Structures are given as structure tokens and as C-alpha cells.
Image (cartoon, rainbow, N blue to C red):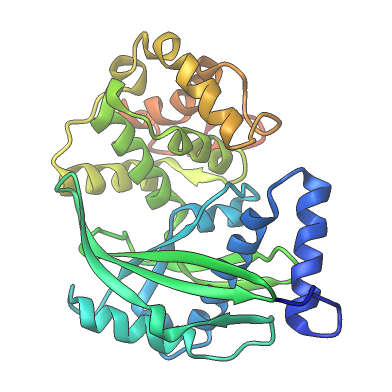
Length: 301
């Protein structure tokens, strides 16, 4: 029988603090244990010789925009080594074998990679692993993708950690995060079920200034890479908000995002289109997105 965690060990203190934090915020404690394990993996990655091999993207990166959302995986872009399962496993195993004073224990023997392919637009390796924190067993995985463009280069992302402090590591630039999500929305059109992409677009554009010329260049690069024809979001998704509303409401409730997102999907879509459609129309050169006012401001000439 596993003994109850106590504050006598780093693992016990972290377990109890995360459980209390989850209770205070009305979240499932396992969600916070998982986020903590993802943070622990990234902390080890940032301190490892393999830090330059990867750039962070996806849900965990949203912490940089003060917009955490439930996630069980890490999305990483690989650079400088081949799309080879044993090679990826070796690098990930070397990361999780590192020690950190956070109470987490990763089991290197659970690091297992499989090839993944997402609608022929994404290739990479999914690496499963298991961590433990006191009596919590935490399965998680890292999706390592190859070949996606990062223009002009990864930047240093600063992530706030659940139990205080910050972590710095290589991540996608803001405009590339936005470009991938906007192009995905255009490509999938009314078939999309990626509600989190719309939530993320709104969160990023509420937090960051974005130069218009850089945003257009990023969208063009991602669209060319994926062979997607660009059209305004309002055109691609005309009438979609009404059809999507029941599914949006269900997803929002299951993710416990009622306090952080609008009830009407139409309102969220309007927010995303206000940012994206001027870029897609080619009218944002010489402009910068102002997050507080939510508009494209013309720069002095």
C-alpha cells in the first residue's frame, strides 16, 4: 500500500501543493500533475545538451501567453537530426535521465517511439513515457515533428511554472504559432473540430503585439509548405458558427473553460477574424496589432 504523500520530501510537497492549487481553481488534480510533469520534462530538456535540437510548440507553449489549457502532450519541432525513431528515443531518454529537484521521477524504460502521420501534412515521432510524483503515476507523450518551417528562427520562450518561477527554452515565434493555427482553420474549413486553435488565436492576440508584415510572411510560408490556398476566415467559415455552436459548447464545458472563453462560438470567431482577415487581405504591411485595443494600428511613415 502506497503511503500518503507528506511535506517531508520534494515529491510530497509538490504533490500536495498541486492538489491544493487544483482544488482552489476547480480543476482535476491529475490535470495539474500532468502539466507539472510536462514542465519537468521541459526543465530537463532546457538543461540538457539536446536543448538546441528542439523548439517548443503547441499547448504547453500557451503558458507563455498566460493561457494554460488542459494538455497531456508536448509538441516539439526537431532540427539538425533525422526523422528516425531510435535516434529520437535516444535523445528523449537522455533528457528524462537527468535529475532535477522537483520530486518527479521519469522512467527511461518507458520511453517508446512510434511513427505518426497527420493527414499527410505532418510527419514525426510520438514518444510515450511515464513519470511519477509521490503516489501519482503520470503517462504523457512528446510529439516530435520534422520539416515544418520556423521563420525566421526559434526564439527564447519564457514559461511561468505552476509552482512559481520561470523556464526559458527555444520555442516558436508568436507569428509562426498564429500562422499555423490560421492556415489550419482555412484548410479544414467547416470540417474543423480544432476548437483549441481558435481559443489559442484569441489568447495570443490578446497578449502580444504582432507586426503585420511578419504575420503575412509567416502565413504565406506555412500555406506554401502545406499547399493551402488562402482565403479570409469569414469566407471559409461563413455560417459555420451557428452549426458549430452545440459542439463548441460541449467541448468548452468538458475542458472547463467556461470562465475563459465566450459562450457563443460566433464571438470567438469574430475575434479571430478581426486579427486574421486583414492579414489575409494584404492590408497589414506597415501596421502592428495592438492587443489591448484589438486592432491593426498604422505605423508612422
